[in-house]
Length: 213
Image 1 (cartoon, rainbow, N blue to C red):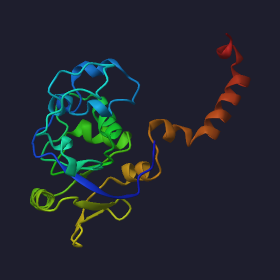
Image 2 (cartoon, rainbow, N blue to C red):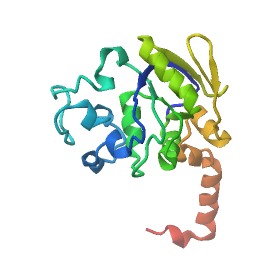
Image 3 (cartoon, helix red, strand yellow):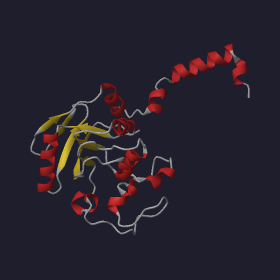
Image 4 (tube, rainbow, N blue to C red):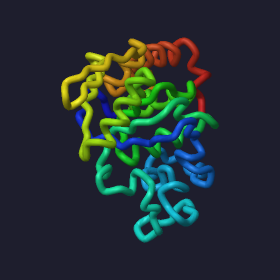
């Protein structure tokens, strides 16, 4: 997993509450468990005017010009600004895979669905919870200023606006450690590789029949 420390990037505003995981990545794309390749189908039913299917190229599909990610001013955004209860619905891990595949590393919202919130950390995305009033001010600023950017610093646990306003956010210390060091569940296990190998070696000697093919 790619480590996350800090990011200064353009913001895309998704002005909808209760965005569920089926909207983030529709159910027909759940057939694949590759973890990659879902970016083009992020918010598929909102981005495109036709129905997307797994394996279909999105290069020539008709796009919805009204959807935020299709607007030129929000191209290359890596920070998503959202409303409350983002990521509700099913527990599909494909949702953070699609967001990450598109390029988002940070999502800022007043609240998140619990399972989605946890899945973000496990897949290299930082979900930032800010008060609703602060999020409202950020939506207004993004609307007023084209190319609006934010600076997100995970070690300092701050979001800083272009005019210097600083918003502090809380994050669980263990989740912070994992994200800063790029440790997913496999990475955490491999931190104990020496101890695991020592146990296996001892086990082979004390109970060799367990390892018979």
